[in-house]
Length: 509
Image 1 (cartoon, helix red, strand yellow):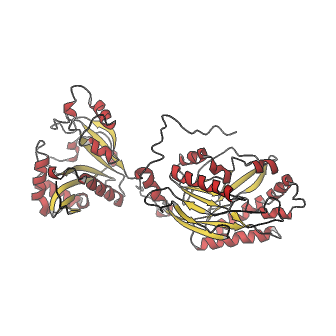
Image 2 (cartoon, helix red, strand yellow):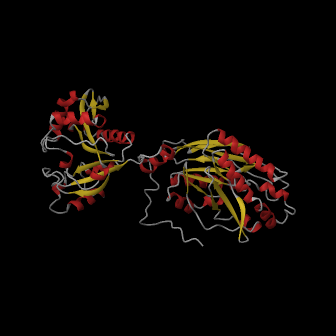
Image 3 (cartoon, helix red, strand yellow):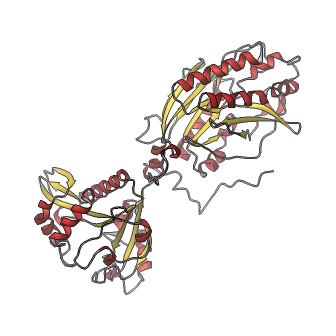
């Protein structure tokens, strides 16, 4: 063991060949030893960033050699000879959209320090930096010869995958997030230990972006604004809409991509009702203004270049009252999400019914879902949205007491963790005693993240002062979600036991 390690990673130069030869001769003594000098020099010339070494006190103790290849060509069956010409030059495709891992080797006396993992991580970083689709590799299975008399190569792969057997190369590859995509025959015929077999391994770059028009490319940094709305007495619809425009204007000044309003934010208009004591008629009176609000807020979305989530408003369809949230995109299109689970109060006093559809909406700043207040307390809905690759879940809510608010908050935090997404909750505050059912409010609007190292320690991205009218902003990194889903401390979505259970959406009514 080495007590005084001083490790550095760098790219190879032509002057390193003598050390490379010593190391490769030692590791590949059963496969013909080192590559010739001209082979290594050509690798360095053709793809210098892909030739990486690990040093201890200036001595090379590990290597990772790579070339660029066509993903379409080398993600299908091939042999090692397909990478090499007759003069033992390894063929690098400068226009290739994938990396091919030729070799990773560690000096025998330095094994046990997980140094190979460092070289693999350096390769992954390079793959991301060059926006390459994947890392491919043909992996030897050097322990297969010990079991070839009792099982096929395919059976051996499955036994190693299930950790019933250990293979020094395949086990290591699997632990570094590589997937076996197929078994290659006669890959390297002289490899007697592997009996000529190899695995075709692949690590996908989840950040890969195909060449595209920059204007149409996906945003990865998204800013959201939420309005913790003060319920106040109003004299007219125009007065309330001026307040709506004021907030949209203010949030757009900070270059936000979204603005979120609370559930039933325009409920103070009930105070204009001729007879608000009749709650069934009062909510229908409020619904009479919804079409105007949708039209006006859609125009604000276009004028102020911001996607508006309208909180929620009552809508009458076929004489049935629904609680509906609208997504007004900044391109002028509008979509809706009905509240699915209706609270006892809504059902009893306002005779509201639940909707029957659930969807994820594409926007120019990510894929978003909307669950209105009580809906977020049902984990099945969040999971169904997550299965449609939702990035951000918006939750407009309206609660009167702190315990009601905490139900929404804690369930929303759970949705962020279990579905590996951002969740934004937004409510209203203030007292309005002159309006029936709006006399008290409680809210603390917040933005929640998954719970992992790359997010705040408490998984709270931002939050408002409780019960105070204010604007809340938060910047969300959608690429962090992709990394969390593939390489996080835990993988809630990937690790579901779908062999035991599932959540399914039945056909809509």
